[in-house]
Image (tube, rainbow, N blue to C red; front, side, top):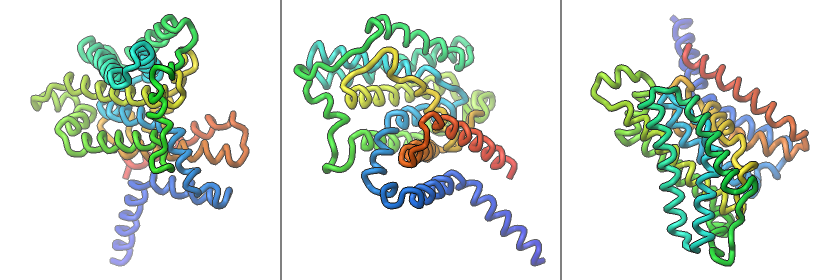
Length: 325
């Protein structure tokens, strides 16, 4: 009898540890960083630097979470971010109207992703292929439009545009961190308390059954891509404001891979229908802490991607273990 109770307790403990493994990983990494670098790692300023440096990709990862949960993927986010930023900066430079420029950028990003969603659903083409093609299209058009270079913000016409990202709230909190927090709350609310959020999970879990229940699965997938477009638009504005420029060749490179890595590390299944939006937050923290620790410890920067690769593979293996429990 005691052996049975012990086994049940051990099984329950194992499930708790497994379901919270991503949180435990973050805690272990913070402890390791603390012992490695003392108070410097745990300082408020260092923590803000981690969040600020990864806020743009983190925002994209929030949108990527919905796309992956719906059973799709988007490889065009980096190039699309450059396109949205180019549209926004060009409009602001020519008119000096920051508000209209922001609205135009958000509408453009949502429209681009909506078109991608329509091609995927109505054309019955795998999202991997469609978004790969869109990545080439966006990057090529940006290089053509910017003549292989970039656009710099005309500070004489829009001097306050750079303050969108470079202003410090209360003198301590970088605005990109604030924007990430707001986007996280919005996307978390959609996933937990809206019909759209529940339908996105249903489509990714079992599209055929969801369709038979009377839900327009194509519409849900398109809306998931539209949310992706919203995230890309906000990321584009934050990035262009912070840098004061956007480049057609170097900006946004590998952002899609890093965003996917954040979602996978955070426990969102590539199979669709599983995972939490909060996982994208934990994934961002893990990658951010890895990059920060490598910098503080003076490790060769060329090893950063090797560490990322190990973490991604470990995250996938943990997901498989979770399904076996």
